[in-house]
Amino acid sequence: MPIAIKEEVSVPKGVEVGLECRTVEVSGPKGKLSRKFDMPGIKLRADGQSIFIEAGSSRRRHRAAVGMIRAHLQNMFKGVTEGFTYKLRVVYSHFPLTVKIENKRVLIHNFLGGRAPRIAKIVGNASVNLGGDEIIVEGVDKDEVGQTAFNIEQATFIKHLDPRVFQDGCYIVERA
Image (cartoon, rainbow, N blue to C red; front, top):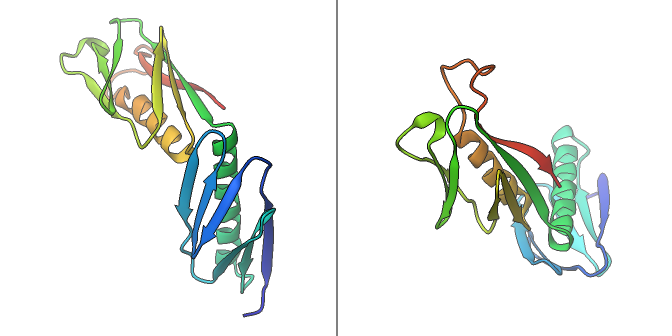
């Protein structure tokens, strides 16, 4: 198969990469991640210093797949070296909210005076910490951290009320 597209992703110092079939395992000071890239027409090769992504065609689908794999690898490298952090702000003006963590769920009590708590699922190995009117979601996997923060934000989504008046809820204010 002739190579039409070839991308090189360099591995940062302090990060170890293992490639077996189409599964990439990345380990670093913060933790370990693995992801399977099962794309037809895309090959992955690795030496100690970098990972090569190769496609046999320069079609749009293959260019997009190569760019997606490169972005996922860079996010994996950042995750195992620095980690990802999302900060959410708890805002209320009508009823005071209380936020608790139980098992793998975030419970939001007294949202707009409701009796039943709003529930948001914590995905994977993301950790959620509470500090006053701030919720901090941290982890190594960007997908898990982002999905957990979004679940918390969506749990307090308000329907059928004027959003200019009812601004209560949990909102993502910072991503790092």
